Image 1 (cartoon, rainbow over the protein chains, first blue to last red):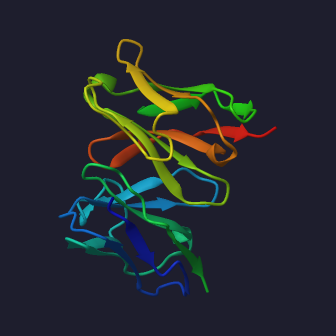
Image 2 (cartoon, rainbow over the protein chains, first blue to last red):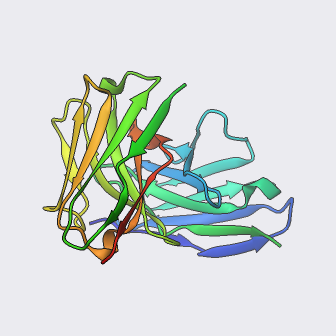
Image 3 (cartoon, each protein chain N blue to C red):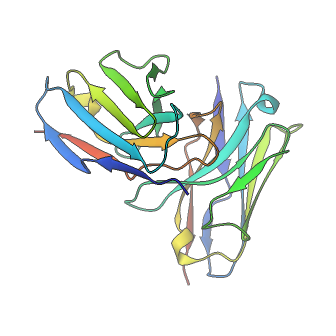
Length: 106
Length: 116
């Protein structure tokens, strides 16, 4: 089975900072990679799919890149409303989620 | 409005059974694969099971294989999860989610607690 890892597990950054989260697959998954945002007490929300395609309605400060085994989610200018846990997910065959990255404001 | 509403959660003893339902509205239910995802208290997301639009393809996580059964009724716009032989580690919020690949629409979730 393909495993998904994320780093860091948590981070604290200032408003306006550029934030980067990394997701790694144990085997190549082409670009079958999605990113989700889950705010405290809320339902997960799809941000990006196909590694770099922004879901409709998602602010343009969010971007994704990568292919194969290594992927990144970037928030170009962190906002207070971005406080959340971010999960990557592979969706070719099985649908494994990464362990999550918790993002806080410093 | 596109919406998914789960129901059927509750408190059940270890070894017991529970059937979750997910009612879909606002989209053509029969055109989409559907999924169950769970989240234990304070933990991350865990994919549980998926079913294709016509029920031809069904997949389960190893952690629930042989105990859980996913099904759907396209005439009723409904998704189900029959959970048998429940264990303490099955305690979680269970979400249903629509997929076109990734999971783009999620329900609010229903809590399942397995405890004696």
